[in-house]
Amino acid sequence: MKKMKYFMLLGVAILAVGCSKFSMHRVDVYQGNYIEQQRLENLKPGMTRSEVQLLLGTPLVQDVYDPSVWYYVFFHSDSDGKVKESKQIQVHFDRDGRYQYYNGDIGNSAPIDTASVEAE
Image (cartoon, rainbow, N blue to C red; front, side, top):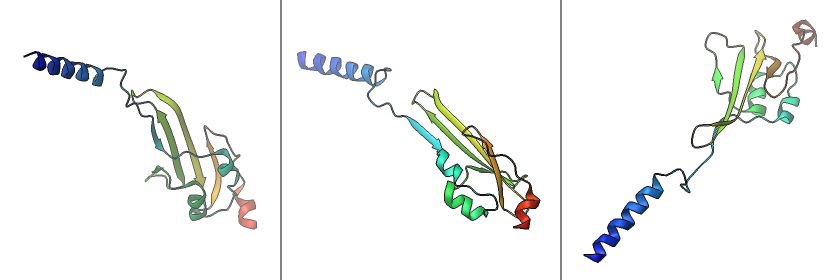
């Protein structure tokens, strides 16, 4: 009988610790594409979509209605859902699928004159 009370008490203690906020199994959650500033600095106007994808990775979102913009989104949150870091970058292409410029949370490159790129 004494053993049974011991196991019941132990079971309740394990359940209480497992369901508390002081659990040992807390994992940060990383979602999307983490893009470093150095990679963005390597983007050159006139690059093809394939070259941009090779440099930055596959975009998280490609808009069906505006295929000239790729969205790279990154979220870092804790296991409770609090966002620690959030970044979004939009990469813009011209009608021919050539890279023009990017803007977003990491930094901005100025939009370029497409006529000067086509002339090269």
